[in-house]
Image (cartoon, rainbow, N blue to C red; front, side):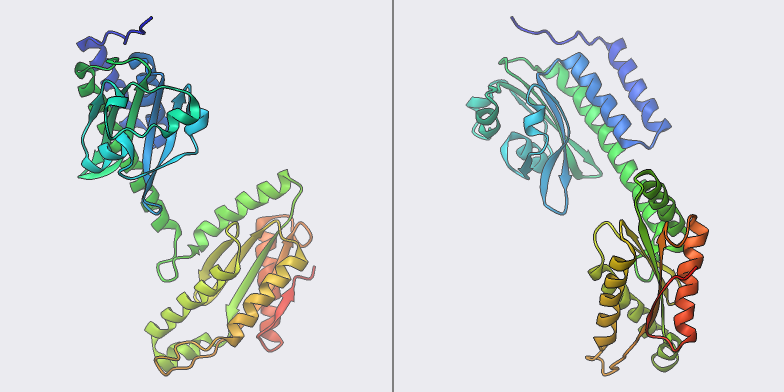
Length: 344
């Protein structure tokens, strides 16, 4: 028995567009708007499978951001090469594709059907395009041939335009936020964002009865670099130090430029022993590196390190910052270029 698409009169379409337009102007939550669009598609177009795929610009492929329907569990972790299959063709050509019998179209890739046992027949693929840039695809699939017809394409294209706006709005806000929490010179997180990160880690550690470490490090005699080689070289050296920090920490750790020539590491799950080992590794690499040899500067730089651990050394954010900072300054007082554990 053929499933019927819900009858979409002008009044219904206008209400849908008003509701989605209102959501777009009242929230910057991309997920909320996209889920609203996909929910409408499910209610009114009655596809058996429907998906929203987004471009992964780093991997240069498409991934399923939202997948709904009979085969959603099988496909949600799949990826498509850009240009692959009907969805890939629609994306690269930035054209809507309406297929009444997929197996009669040479662009169709039946690999997912073979894996799932589902037999695709009708397909609509609508690209989400903003300012000429293809961001992804909305794809509707049905087992019945000739299920989707042209009158329903225009509304889908409008919905795809709304989706593209939601995606771009979200990305724009993310870029603005990224600028506000990153240090211009090193591209590490800045001190303002450090407090937010510490709040997150403190809550996580308390909830899981876990630990985390904070490392303060201050470059020794950095002023001499600026005095002898200029502030441009000094800024370049700070970026080199940032790269050494990033190279030695885990993806779950945080590196922050606290200000001037001072840096902070937040190390989730680390106890005192592990934090000391990581800090020792950073110190050894720093001490063995000769910076700007090609330029003929041959700069050597050391640093003073202080380590504090939650909950061993502190129970609040202010305390752990204070304890790590004091430990670092104890090293400064004793001659620099060393590591000090916090002492209550």
